[in-house]
Length: 349
Image (cartoon, rainbow, N blue to C red; front, side, top):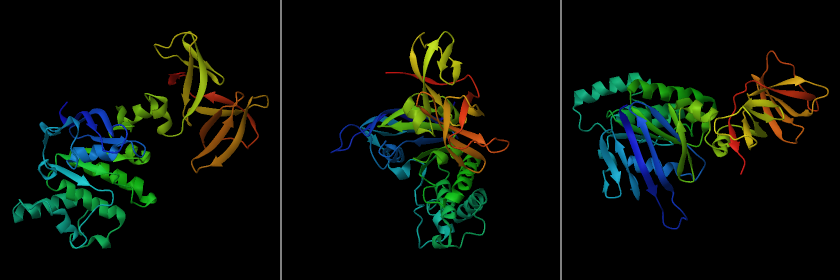
């Protein structure tokens, strides 16, 4: 595996703040892959991106882009000499320059012919043919972000850093633009590091997903793996809706009030655990004698969202396809049926 970005034991503190902003953050991004770092406000995402980009110096650890160390406590290569591109939250385009002039801004070392050739390449890649003479104020938010990405890619950057690139885009266009950004980055073959607090943004763009909390990288992996196999209850709860049911390990099973799941290796017999239930993990069946009751029912277009109160008093959310589907009204007695025996369980402190 060729590494595009390597972050090793990265640490950072700021005066006046208790505790480190970053604490031992370590991860690799293979060349050509897109890595999204997701986390709540104050987790250290922006500081991480600024250190990788060269705007801040780390107090510990190092940053390597390709095969070159660009940051450590004792050395710091300037941002303009790192071979990176940066896509800001709001695009940060020069308002007095045309689209073509914005994109070509970082190509002052290229000859005139090379600049024109590069414009043709990047305009085709980013869907900007016919935009060269327009000004930023004449563009939509999504178009401005495509121009910002084109400017970041134009110098043939080895790494592109993206700071919440979809945060200022109309929500109706966000998913579509996420697809466009991913297509452009993958087609360009560029390694990318994206930081965001928006889960949909991270899932739609990234090849791998890291969760940052309290300055620590608590999990990193393929997005579907992090979602389905979270390393902790915090990660489970942070990524989408999570319900937890109390269970007891009995032989090869974890027994809960809605049924049995497969026990995970290493869970000892008799241990109490919390079993993660995602909204799509269960079905509902009418049962007049059932101990579970529908508390609320909401139609969400392609599926119904049910909040169910179990006999134990715990709540469970179930998302069930709208068609075909028997609609349950609030107050209905039901039985909760797991779709699978596979489950993730966490120990009880």
